[in-house]
Length: 124
Length: 111
Image (cartoon, rainbow over all chains, first blue to last red; front, side, top):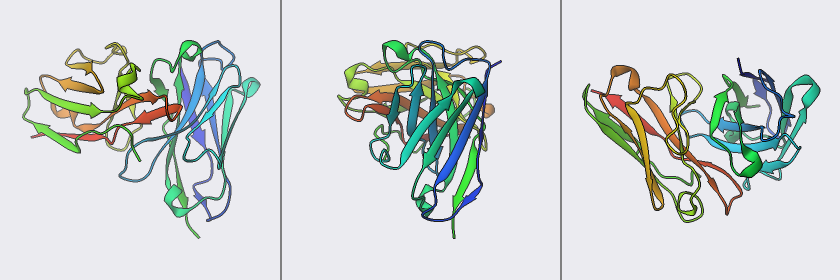
């Protein structure tokens, strides 16, 4: 069974750096074509893709947020970490991680498994 | 900020058919990239409903179907049921943005 679980602080202050961890099981991020993505959803708003890290350590970022994001992986721990700098109240959202397979030859086959999400509030 | 445009809401009576459009551009849907559809039930994480090329994950009923033409795609729900009340999102890849893009989301209400 494939599962993903997000973890991180529920509250961060403006200008602080957010660090989120996605811990997964049931698959290996060293398998060719596998990747893990971060997506967020502000309250009452649409989903927004943030970043992706591939089995071969290639990384991709949202163009609007790329200066603030860093994604990394620890294959031995089955974890993917996202950091977002200079947090602002507009970054208040539920943050999800999700898997995509088949990215070795293109964008892949859709986000087939999602974590339950972790809610982050940015407030002083 | 969403690159793909969906109607904010659609509604229908039980048993009816509803469709949700997803309008993109030549850099995403029009470029031939697959469109995927997600269902988000209230208070839960999104779930993959239909993957590109009309692939439904195990457990998704065939009441859900998709289509694509030019720079647009659509999701159809036939035999609408109360449990279909949810938010629905389309998603594709954008070559100009070199990343994934989501639709604005559509709330389906069963009357």
